Length: 71
Image (cartoon, rainbow, N blue to C red; front, side, top):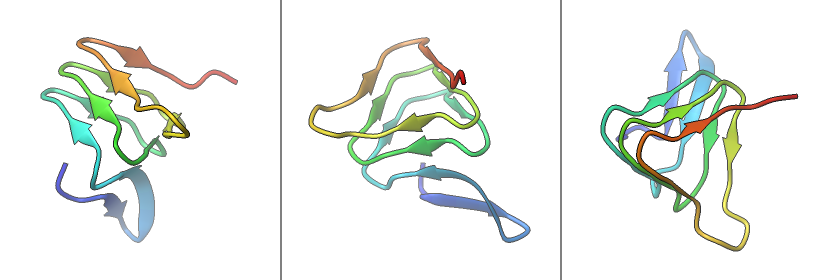
């Protein structure tokens, strides 16, 4: 992804760090946060409100993974 902050009518829709590596056919839903140095494989879906952040380890989501937020 080239843009780290995607906007629509001055509202933040989602955030993808410039250092994240995003594969092909990846769907990142609104209000999701993809942090620094995250690696996302091909055909992955990141659900609404998901937060993927690196604390001490690298985060790698593999091929056809599904990452969703449940409250």
